[in-house]
Amino acid sequence: MTERDHIIKLLQKASGDPNFLKRLKFFHEYDKKPLRRWENWLQMELLYWLHNSGVKDISFEDESSLDKRRIKSKSQPDTYSARIDIVYRRNNCINNVYTGIELKVKDNQCYSVRESLKDLEKISCISNRDWRYYSVFSISIYRFNNNQKYNRLFENEENSVIINLGPYYKAAILCWESSSKKYPSLKEYQYWLKQLNKFI
Image (cartoon, rainbow, N blue to C red; front, top):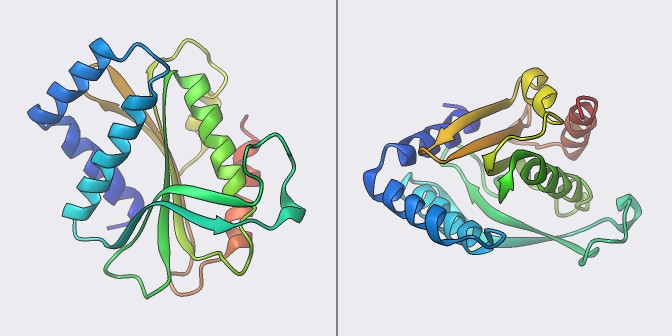
C-alpha cells in the first residue's frame, strides 16, 4: 500500500465511524470561530489514527531548520524553522526516513488550500541537512467550495484527491512521494511543488 492510499484509507475509515461523526457534528454546530480549535482537535485525531495503524516514531509539531537562502517571503512569523504538524515513520521505511503531514481547516476551499500551499512552500526551504522526508502530504479540510480557483489543481494533479469527510466537510489531499525510500530527494520534492504551481 502506498502512503497516499494509507492516508486516504484512514480518512475514509474515520468518515464511517459514528463516534467521529458525532464529534464532527458538534464542532460544526458550535465552533463558529476561524476553526482553530477544530483544526487542533483534528490534528490530534489524525495522530491517534496513525498511532493505531502501527506507524513508528510519530511526533507532533516536528521542527526542521530552514535554508534561509531559499526563503522567498519574510512575512512568515518564523523564517528559521518549519514545524510540520505530524511526522512519522512507516514500518517498511528505514530509520531516519519519514512522512510529513500538514493539516488545515478553514470554512472555504480557497482559503484552506491556499494556506496548505504556503506550508508546502515552506517545507521546500528545509535545509539539505535536515531533509528526511520520503513523502509529504497536505490535507485541506473545508465546508464550502465557493471559488473555482483551485479546481484545476485537483483536476490535473495525479497525486491529489478530494473525499467527503462526514456530511459537512471535504478533505482535499495533495501528496508527494519520493521515488526512493532509502534516499529521499529534496530536489524531487521541489520539482513536484514547481509543477504543482503551474495549475494555480
